[in-house]
Length: 93
Image (cartoon, rainbow, N blue to C red; front, side):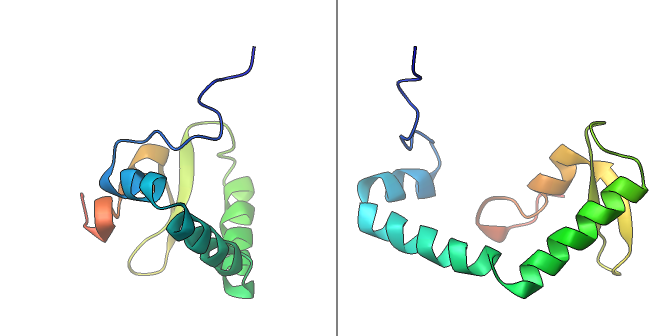
Protein backbone atom coordinates (compact mmCIF):
# COMPACT_ATOMS: atom_id res chain seq x y z
CA UNK A 1 0.00 0.00 0.00
CA UNK A 2 1.35 3.41 -0.94
CA UNK A 3 1.87 5.99 1.77
CA UNK A 4 -1.04 8.40 1.36
CA UNK A 5 1.13 11.28 2.63
CA UNK A 6 3.96 10.66 0.17
CA UNK A 7 4.68 13.78 -1.87
CA UNK A 8 2.57 16.00 0.40
CA UNK A 9 3.95 18.76 2.58
CA UNK A 10 2.49 18.01 5.98
CA UNK A 11 4.97 19.70 8.30
CA UNK A 12 3.75 21.90 11.10
CA UNK A 13 6.40 24.60 10.94
CA UNK A 14 5.48 28.06 9.72
CA UNK A 15 7.62 27.69 6.60
CA UNK A 16 6.12 24.27 5.78
CA UNK A 17 2.61 25.68 5.98
CA UNK A 18 3.65 28.68 3.84
CA UNK A 19 5.10 26.51 1.08
CA UNK A 20 2.07 24.18 1.17
CA UNK A 21 -0.18 27.21 0.51
CA UNK A 22 2.13 28.76 -2.10
CA UNK A 23 3.18 26.17 -4.67
CA UNK A 24 4.90 28.76 -6.86
CA UNK A 25 7.10 29.80 -3.94
CA UNK A 26 7.87 26.11 -3.29
CA UNK A 27 8.94 25.64 -6.94
CA UNK A 28 11.12 28.76 -6.76
CA UNK A 29 12.79 27.58 -3.54
CA UNK A 30 13.38 24.07 -4.92
CA UNK A 31 14.96 25.55 -8.06
CA UNK A 32 17.25 27.72 -5.90
CA UNK A 33 18.21 24.76 -3.70
CA UNK A 34 19.00 22.64 -6.75
CA UNK A 35 21.42 25.29 -8.05
CA UNK A 36 22.92 25.94 -4.60
CA UNK A 37 23.64 22.31 -3.77
CA UNK A 38 25.04 21.66 -7.26
CA UNK A 39 27.67 24.40 -6.87
CA UNK A 40 31.33 23.38 -6.73
CA UNK A 41 31.68 24.93 -3.27
CA UNK A 42 28.88 22.77 -1.82
CA UNK A 43 30.18 19.64 -3.58
CA UNK A 44 33.66 20.21 -2.16
CA UNK A 45 32.21 20.81 1.31
CA UNK A 46 30.20 17.56 1.19
CA UNK A 47 33.15 15.61 -0.19
CA UNK A 48 35.39 16.88 2.61
CA UNK A 49 32.92 15.85 5.31
CA UNK A 50 32.21 12.47 3.68
CA UNK A 51 35.94 11.70 3.46
CA UNK A 52 36.47 12.76 7.07
CA UNK A 53 33.51 10.61 8.12
CA UNK A 54 35.10 7.57 6.48
CA UNK A 55 38.54 8.41 7.92
CA UNK A 56 37.17 8.73 11.45
CA UNK A 57 35.25 5.48 11.09
CA UNK A 58 31.95 6.96 12.15
CA UNK A 59 29.66 5.53 9.48
CA UNK A 60 26.45 4.14 10.95
CA UNK A 61 27.19 5.03 14.57
CA UNK A 62 24.81 7.99 14.90
CA UNK A 63 27.61 10.56 14.66
CA UNK A 64 28.22 13.27 12.11
CA UNK A 65 31.38 15.06 11.09
CA UNK A 66 31.02 18.75 11.80
CA UNK A 67 33.03 21.91 11.27
CA UNK A 68 33.68 23.88 14.45
CA UNK A 69 33.79 27.67 14.47
CA UNK A 70 37.58 27.51 14.42
CA UNK A 71 37.46 25.35 11.27
CA UNK A 72 38.44 22.02 12.82
CA UNK A 73 36.54 18.87 11.88
CA UNK A 74 35.11 16.91 14.82
CA UNK A 75 32.65 14.10 15.47
CA UNK A 76 29.40 14.91 17.23
CA UNK A 77 25.90 13.51 17.61
CA UNK A 78 23.82 13.87 14.44
CA UNK A 79 21.00 15.52 16.36
CA UNK A 80 23.32 18.20 17.79
CA UNK A 81 24.99 18.88 14.46
CA UNK A 82 21.79 19.09 12.41
CA UNK A 83 19.90 21.18 14.96
CA UNK A 84 22.62 23.74 15.55
CA UNK A 85 21.23 26.61 13.52
CA UNK A 86 17.67 26.11 14.69
CA UNK A 87 14.53 27.55 13.22
CA UNK A 88 15.18 30.58 11.07
CA UNK A 89 18.95 30.35 11.60
CA UNK A 90 18.73 31.11 15.33
CA UNK A 91 21.25 29.13 17.38
CA UNK A 92 19.84 26.61 19.81
CA UNK A 93 23.12 25.53 21.41
